[in-house]
Length: 126
Image (cartoon, rainbow, N blue to C red):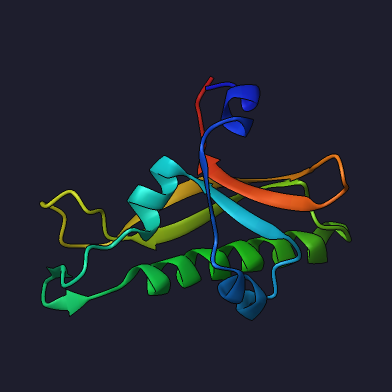
């Protein structure tokens, strides 16, 4: 998937209350595959007796994004337009019982009105 294809992929908007809670500077959207892999959590689903929910998983991803953006800003003095974020999540594959890390790309773009949106997608190898 090229950057252009990624920009036009269907996006799911993040919860605005969680964006405010984590202090992110812009709205956030996920590609559908990131939402399914890193956020979605079926009602009542447990892994090793541990329950999670989609809100908790989304908050953890947004908190990791905010930390990555702030960490880079402290080093280079400005917020980057692109950053790689690593989060740990339990895959919903029916087999996994331990959390696994996944690296994601957070790419900030401005629309024709100047409003910024951070889109979180998979890192694609070229």
